Amino acid sequence: MYACANGHLGCAEFLVTHGANVGQDRQDGWTALMSASKHGQLVCVEYLVTHGARVEHPTKDGRTALMFASQSGHLACVEYLVTHGAQVGQAAQDGETPLMSAAENGHVACVEYLVTHGAEV
Image (cartoon, rainbow, N blue to C red; front, side):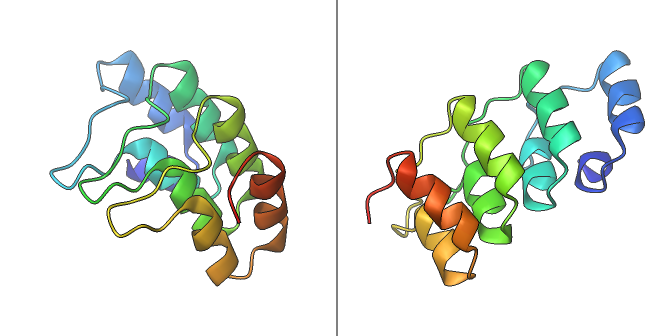
């Protein structure tokens, strides 16, 4: 998880090669894909998804990697996740959507992308 958050692809590859589960989550549901998405580590996001990480896996409160990428304004990660099946309208338990996360943090490019890809305004 920390390797992906910090963009250490070689370390992530080593761990996966030696049996690490790319879909493993913590007790709160947090995954390596969420860490990579939140920190804009596109290369790690691509690697994890290619190796079986579930794009739509939620935390215990219903947040997804797309929400974390949107919240942090990482447009390239947002685009990649959406093109690989992330649902732009999926809401967390509190009703927050990726669009709301992007908007409340001032990430205009992410807002525009999400709206043009079906997010309800």
